[in-house]
Length: 62
Picture 1 (cartoon, rainbow, N blue to C red):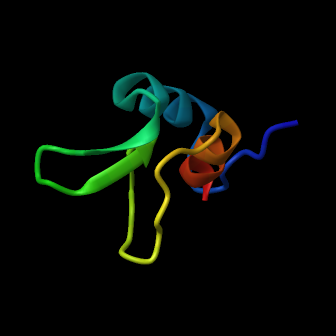
Picture 2 (cartoon, helix red, strand yellow):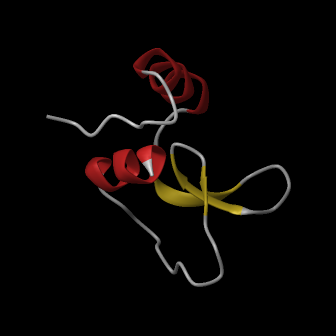
């Protein structure tokens, strides 16, 4: 059973997924930030290049 965020409703999570889209490979957003998953902005300590769908879900719900 997937973890449901206590901060956001399931409808909100579904909207974010649809709006943001999923990228399993890091990319630069319009502001030049490294982003991965469903819009997770990478910190300097996060050296990820690729993630799994499960990791993307975890980033979104964390």
